[in-house]
Length: 283
Image (cartoon, rainbow, N blue to C red; front, side, top):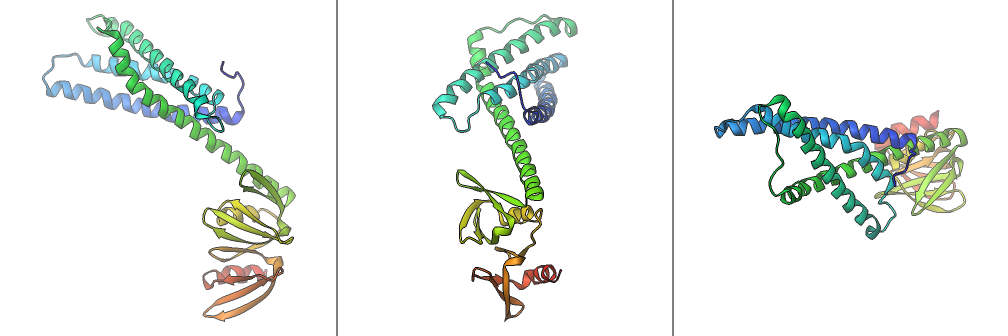
């Protein structure tokens, strides 16, 4: 059974996804209709152009009507942290239901619209089981794309909320949030001496002698630390230093420098960032 309630972020992400998908479906409807009309004209098929618009439009309208339900289903049946053997049967069954509803809505619209706009009535296709199988092959792919779009939009919205919460925490509590493996660590900004980029991670060194390997970029950590009361300086493309921890700066020639921090570590100072760390230290 679908969940009746949803967080504001869920509703927002689902609404945005529906709008984007709707635009794509409408564009596809127009392109498919015009392409079909052009193909029939090229083959000299004597057929009313309204058939193309009705056939393609009925499929598009039926698809659009199902989008909200896909969003709710994706929210109520998450795949993250769940065994594939648990969520896969649910999504397979949901794809079958989606296809059946899509075909039923499409045929119902054609049945009602044909007599209104054409001199013919709509008759159900022969061998309906083959038609359903043919439609399911397409609908399964469409369903998978829609589910992926809802999941990605929801994840993006969660990331925005998470970033906003981390920024607020840095501003009000002068602490940063680090994702270290499966753990979330909170560090006072004053305890951080320096940090070093390490691929997709950042090594964060503290005054207590500990090192935390955080899932972040150096630029992302720098932006977060800028929200605190501490001054952090980018001295090198791979290094970030708390200005309060700097004990000594030794020029090495050609504009570079060796920067000694309070725990005795020596951090490189690149001439590329010389103006940045010099101006911040002077202020």
